[in-house]
Image (tube, rainbow, N blue to C red; front, side):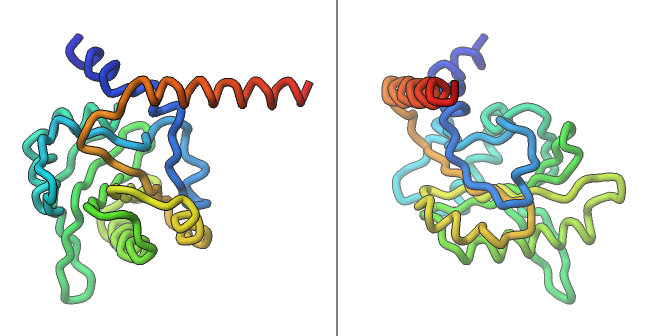
Length: 200
C-alpha cells in the first residue's frame, strides 16, 4: 500500500506515458516501458550541490526504494563494480541484472547535464562487461546514463551511431508537480486523438 501511494505521489503512470528517454538505435528493440524517464529520487534527500559520490552513497543507503523506482525485475549486483581492462581497474557506478531481459544493466550517474563524451565511457564499460562478466546465454549488457538534465538534440546526435544498447534518462531529486504531468498527458492524448482522426 505504501508503494502504491508513492507511485501516485510521484506520478509513475504519467511519467511512463510521457517518457522522453533517448535510446541508441540498438536499444530500440527493447520492450516498451521497462525504463522510465525521468526517474524521481525524492527519497534520497540530497542537498543542493551534492557530488556524484554523494548521489551514489545515498542510492546505496536507500537501495530498496531505488529498486522500486527503477522498476520490476532488477537484481542488485553492486556499486563501484570492478572491471579490469589491461593492467587497469575501472569501477562502474551501479550494476544490476534484469531477470526478464536476461542481461546486465549498468546505471552510470552524472550530476550534470548530458555531454556527448559520457557515451564513450559508457560504451567502454558495456564492452568490458560483455567480454568479461556476461555469461554466454545472456543478452548484451544495457547502459542507462542518468543525467541531471539533457538537451534532446544533443543526445540524439550523440546516440545516432552508437552500437551499444544504451539509454539516456533524466533524474530528479524533487517531486514533479503532478498537475503539470497530468496536463502534459492530456495534451499527448489530444495529439494522439487528432492523428488518429486524420488517419481514418
